[in-house]
Length: 604
DNA sequence: TCTGGGGTCCTGAACCAT
DNA sequence: TCTGATGGTTCAGGACCC
Image (cartoon, rainbow, N blue to C red; front, top):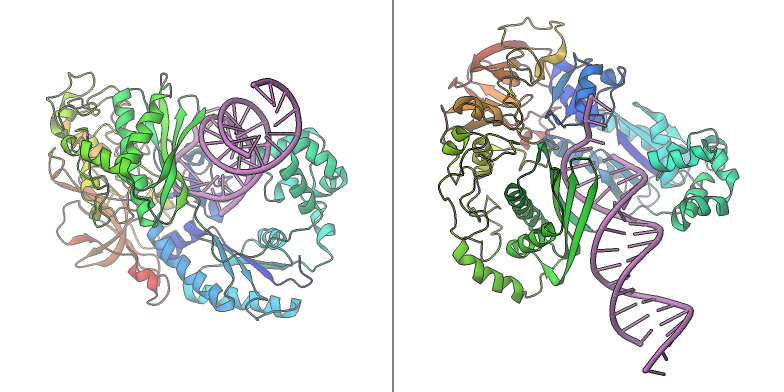
């Protein structure tokens, strides 16, 4: 806690939605909701226009659709947000070397360490200048909080939203905090909030009055003491520029619960591969392998195992994850699986165990040396013969549910060899062919592997033809549902939807899993999946370039058509045109810079 | 009517070593 | 040799944050 309000907290307003609105003029002033569009998706960010309907972050997408049916629904494009974030963080670093990013859209800055402010007046001036600079560089607004501590600066920026600045003068904090809800304080979530409410404590003032001993009794030592100090406005935490990563994990929620044990094992292996890929990208190895399982009833359990030394070998992580899975009862179904590594080190010990496993694995198709960092497909060769594409998706899809397991595919003797999860009873990601196809060709996924975006392929028909009605006049006030993934029948996300757990005909099934990947532009499917016609799929909201009409973005697609709105960040709302999905003049493209020719242009 | 993904931190139990 | 205190590590679960 310092005597002058020289700790700044910046929070960009409805960041993802604002970036989308900035890059798509026709969405400005309209309700925009960014998040996972699958049946189990949740809202990542809602524009302020959508919030007026009661939509907020973390709300199930189905609920958001009911509250705000005319909103535009978009998949997150993390690459673009990251590029914009880098511009903003660059501006913060011009203020001070002590910048602590909390996420893509939020950071603390120590203005004193940067020598730009030692009193209220200078801090306020720096904050106002920053807001103006961000607007000029990105076209976006952010809210700034200034105070003598991190906690208060964050409270201030929250109070300043949207597009404001609030400075809390040291000495006034208790008075300011007293009437606020306990939920204002960091560390008080739904559970603690409810706990306090039952004790008759709803405001920060009442929290301070309760006293430290009472809070410790209710919430435990660490939490109780911390909360009491916060209630008094006391917070000595310093702004920390560099934070060490403590763990790396990946997880997937499935559109339909998994029951088949073979399929569950296969998914755990895939997750282990992806996790190791991420681990290596971050330059780490780790000792503790964690398996996370969320069951059909939403109960979540974790199992972990600590190795003798740190590893980044895919075979070791796979083995450990598989062992941990053996101790978990999955009867009833599994909705989420995750694999993580903690106890990180920035080096790898000579791991004889890994070498031994690798030697064993060679014969069974295990990647002996672990992942090759240069390998675009971190999964390496299909280890157990379960990859639907590599194992021959065509037969799998056509056989459908309850089919006799297909001919042996993959490594003989490997777990599950010859069993085909796609043809099995689970039905999640029914048409695995196209999914696998995308995995085999990461270049088709501009935003990286599934799971990084909060979305995963959905059995939904996806890419419905919301805009397949042909040209729409520029500036039309047609509901901004443009980017919505409407089914061909008009029902969101239901075009060609195979029923849960059932595979449909060849072509439909390909369409089913051709649903948009994270920020995906065109996703060629069919050719590598070996199923149906070669047809390009266009992700809702993704950027495209047309040889005649120039830059635009995909409003929707389906039944062989893709609808594109031709506009760019600097333009007015553009015209909508519909093309055949295989129109040779239409190609995926990189996002355009939101302002001028900034670095966002490079984002893909 | 449902509940994502990637994290961090804390607590308590069990176990082991000193 | 036994007992109790203490402290570190591992493991599992839970709350919280963006």
